[in-house]
Image 1: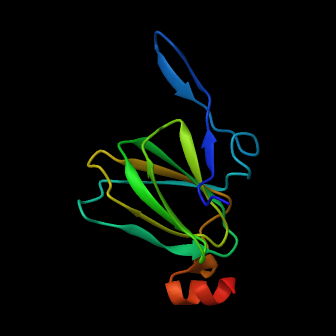
Image 2: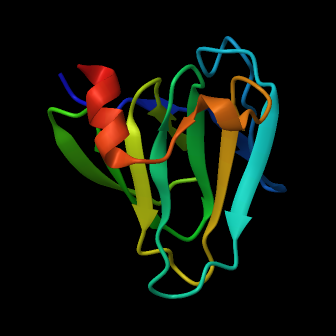
Length: 132
């Protein structure tokens, strides 16, 4: 079983340009309750380093690129996000790390719920205990 679950979004367009539409419960498997994006990340900075107990997210690299490490406590997989028409599912109880951001990277994340600090697991050791 792969930890890398991608959603390919339809790209529509004509001579005026392209358009990608992402619809809750159609393009992605949940209702969107929060959207945030990361940009201006300095060279060598890594982000993430947590898992969520209940939150699901889909990450889309709108510009540039970055790498993801996905970890379910048993398996680890890495991938590069560099397409603005493809999203990576960050599922419940998946430790994730983002790194090697290009200078022009804009990483948008669609989340299934509002921010709730109590949903975060920020210690890798605690994450491993929780999944057992």
